[in-house]
Length: 264
Image (cartoon, rainbow, N blue to C red; front, side, top):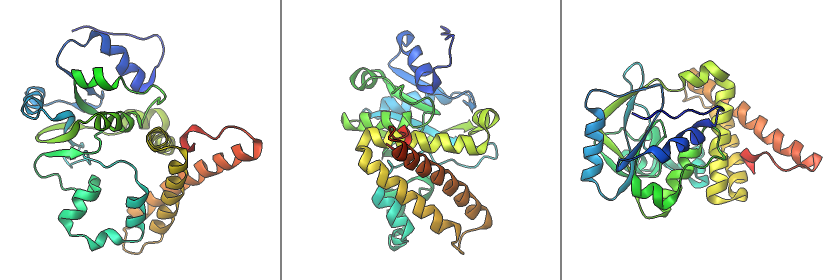
């Protein structure tokens, strides 16, 4: 095993990219330090990728400390999907159709899925030829969002992205970042990274509308009587973050400065 060290913190993307020159296999596995790989889990994941040649990248299932399944297969950030959820139009769809259109927490995760939009970089396996074709992770992202934008490029290049239903890794999600930043700062960085990826993918105008749509959606969720107290509290937390992002953009406009990269 070859170790690679850096004198500075290059962030998630920069740290991963630093390792690419020493990658020799036909696959590259990105793995967070808070992920535990079960016995033979890696071999099974590689075999699954060998059996699915149309997949450019994939992920195992991820379980938290309590054994609960995390949302691995996800859709790209989308104004129509955000609006549909806010207006409850998604409830007009059957459960099966809703799960396929929205993925994330709507998808129960039964079996494999061979056509998701993106999977988190926590435990992502990528073919060598895909990396050589689309390039490395974008180092514009220090942490969060780089996996979304990378999967966008992978799919644009004609590859699919999937989730392996038979392999489970344990992921103590967010524990290292919580210790470093705390919940509010972690959430702020997560949303900033997602919006930066959205800007790279769809342009600044689309991203600005998406920020406003999500802000309105969280404002609605704060007062939704059908949500639990815990769900409404999470919505209030996300709303606070979005109000900060919107104020930062407005302040930049008043001062004549470039808009914060998260909402540009």
